[in-house]
Amino acid sequence: MMERPKTFFDYIAQTLMTFGLTVAVFLLLTLFLGNAAQEVSTLFSLGEKGVSVASLAQLLLLCACIVFFRFLFFTETIIRKAGVAARTVAMLFCTVVLILLFVIAFRWFPAKMPLAWVSFGVCFVVCFLLGALVSSCKERLENRKMADALEKMKNSGK
Image (cartoon, one colour):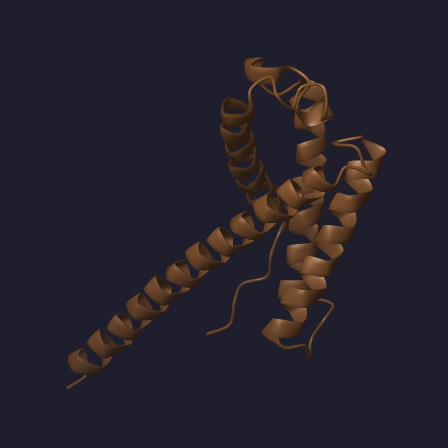
């Protein structure tokens, strides 16, 4: 079965869903880091009081760009003959480069602070792995539903 073409509304919906999950992660980080990261990172400039409007706007822009990469690399609109692994690597590369640019442009944390990079790397890898796990589970459930529906169609035709 062919997937329906993506629309602007699909892009907006995916961006808002990604943004919501990102904000949830940052709220948890704010709870755990509290005021400790307030002087180090512009993302945590309010300390335990929350995330600033400027940081939320930056995160929304980041999410919109990442969703654009997802549509670019995982729909057949532009890239037609690449495998899933190549698409995933290309998207991850573009996402990491974009985040590096955001770190520098918005001074999310000092670029010369190794602990900040290690913390970012760990958080990025954990979030990526959780996202991959959720996507894999979702795909398995959808495949199971499709197989069940196909089996019902076969049985009803007898």
